[in-house]
Amino acid sequence: MLDLGSDLAAALDPVAFAGRLAFDAETWQQRLLRSTASRVLVRCARQVGKTQTTSFKAVHVALYRSGSLVLIISPSQRQSDEMLLRVKALYRTLGRAKLAKDSGSELVLENGSRIVSLPGTEGTSRGFSGAQLIVLDEASRVEDSIFASVLPMVASDGAIWALSTPWGRRGWFYELHDDVANGWQRHKVTVYESGQYGPHRIAEVKAALGSYVFASDYECEFGDTDSQLFGTEMVRAAFTPAIKPLEFA
Image (cartoon, rainbow, N blue to C red; front, side, top):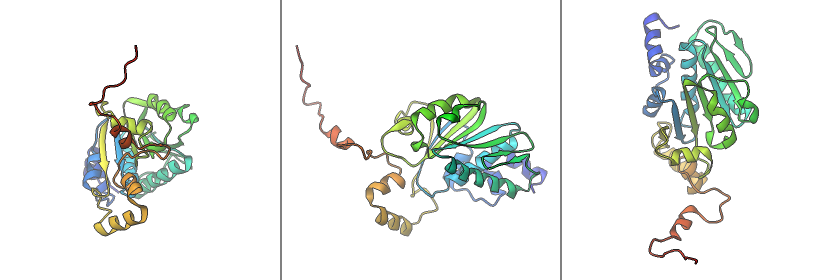
């Protein structure tokens, strides 16, 4: 249970809030938790702690902004429910008052806040609006049409967090990263920025996966898609300003 002074500090600082639950945030996690940006892209390696970090953010928003709506959206309901389970575990650890509702896909706090897990399907866009925080987990696998339907669901003062490993040079997640002037705040967390990986583990994973998959899933590089006949660099190399294109009369 938090005393009044600690609770005030936790309300003002998500990192302090996480610390009260014995979570020692790494540098990149501190930056992300303290982000006040309304649009956030997180390109991250596997198993660096993004789910835990995002769960702390979701609980913090719901707890200290009464009546808020937090949506967790993944490619499948099962993936979204996994994050919601982490959220529930964190809330119980706080020792707060009994929940108003606790179902498989929804958590309702006594202050009226709701945390809802949803699948990345067309039905997601129906019935929700004014969300204070929308978490798009495994965002590179969320279809473009779903992303477009999610955008109107966020409140004017709310935030969208899109977190994922890359999945080739395709889709809205890649395009938002590629457009550096779009106003989205960017975070990149490779195995080299994560305290979860030491040199031995990095070498072990790279040897097991090979350089192509390792570059995508652990170095967070947007590589070519598996459907391309010619690689992007090969196509670019085929063009040169020294040769003018043919002109037709």
